Amino acid sequence: MASIVEPVTNVSATQPAFQAVRNARLTSVDILRGLVMVVMALDHVRDYLTKIPFPPEDLSHTYGALFFTRFITHYCAPTFCLLAGAGAYLAVSRGKTVQQVSHFFWTRGLFLIVLEFTVVGFGWTFYIGGAFAAVIWALGCSMVAMAALVRLPLRWIAAFGLVMIAGHNLLDGIQPQDLGKFAPLWTILHVPGFLLIKPTDIGVMIMYPLVPWIGVMACGYALGALLVRPDRKQLMFRIGLVATVLFFVLRGFNLYGNGTSGLPFTVGHWSVQPTLEHTIISFFNTQKYPPSLDYLLMTLGPTLIVLSWLENVNAERGLGKVLLVYGRVPMFYYVLHIYLAHSVAVMAAWAYHQPVAWLFHGAFATNPIPSGYGHDLPFIYLMWILVVALLYYPCRWYMGFKARHRDWGWLSYV
Image 1 (cartoon, rainbow, N blue to C red):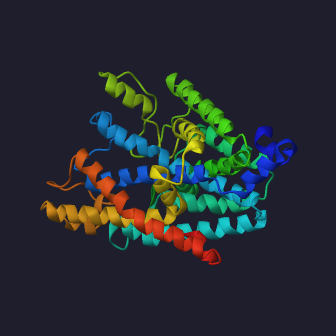
Image 2 (tube, one colour):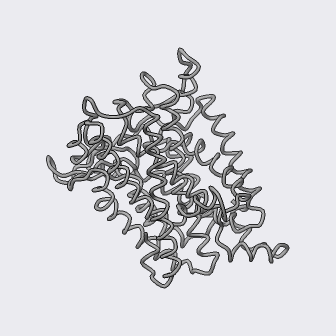
């Protein structure tokens, strides 16, 4: 843990470079965030437009192109969560007090929880009444937890996050029903499922239990101490490489860390399949709900390697400039992309004379895909590109609007 903490205090030999990093916004972080925002849209466009009635992770039915389309989007949620923590530390390094960051964490966390069950929830379903505790809920709850954690010494925060990530799969054998009256709490914390609030008519689907997402954000906060170092490129590459190698070791030997309980089905160990394609799918098919240790190593390891490479990307032109726009306004992008993807699905259904009504009553979130609905992957990829392109100018406008109104504190919540 010393390597995470000491850079903040032992910097006399590189003080000018260190100070420059502290005072500048890290464009590599924004570009990475923008990249995963773009990739995320692919998964959600696929959700709305696919005609395939089974999950891409279902080994008994899936195939390479479909699984890859799902697999590449696994990198999104862990990266969001990690960078949310890192961003908070960077705010401290630029002059905000721990008390200010703590206040921002709990207020924005509560804002995100409310947003999940109102604006975001309606965007997913186009009807009032559906309640799904998904990624925005997990980010919001993790921020509320971080409001308390940031008051601890940095090495304690790092240790807390690492222990939660590495150790939570030891709890996989505990099921909600084993805990009696505390069953709902365990559903919120570790085992996804439907949580009844008022029996028979009101409930919430907990898709993102909070463990280990809180740990990921805590590790992100500690990681921020490395991002203010002038040698951060080398550090990110080394840490990412170690995490990636550890994934291949743990997963390769089926040692530990892939979870035995979750959604949409239990994954468990990988095994040799009748074809090489399905054997590879089995190997990389790790548990996301909740995210297993293998899943987080598989995603966050390569993410940190990519972050080190992005240090060399020019954000003044080309793709880097586009990704920077998306990465500077992630929540604005997130909300817009849900409504846009859902609306594109409605328009495509009308244009192709396919069932439309179900898209206004929960869509894929609450209904099976109706007969005669949906499209193949090439069409889905085309619509993904369209959605991302249509989001560029609204996001660029909002990025400029935020820059011109830095004194409007509430803009930092969106």
